[in-house]
Image 1 (cartoon, rainbow, N blue to C red):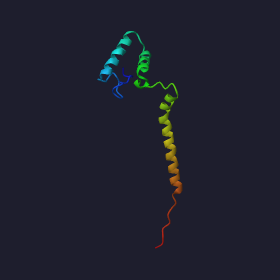
Image 2: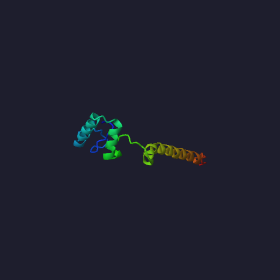
Image 3: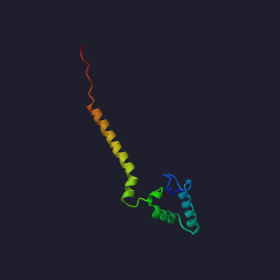
Image 4: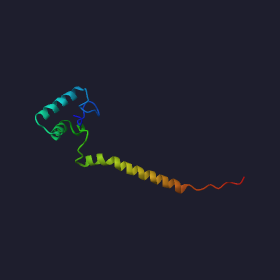
Amino acid sequence: MRELRCVACENEPISQSSAAIAEDMRARVRVMVGEGATDAEVRDWFESRYGEFVLFRPKGKDLTGLFLWSAPFGFLVIGGLIAYGLTRRRRAGAEPVAPEDA
């Protein structure tokens, strides 16, 4: 129940949500577990009904999932390269200033 997102409350698991839909979702999980369903079967059932949004840990099985998991690291590398380039350009452009005779 901690791995399933409440569809009414953003970023709150159904185990902690007080929404009516979360109560229904918890009841469904209990019924499925009572019938012998595995964790994967429960997650798959909820995913087929509500979409991948309901999962706190998306599967990442296609190009979208790959982008979702790799984008933060890519942005970190790009940001580091930009910072390195700006620092290098700033050092190269700085020339010592000679004092003027008054």
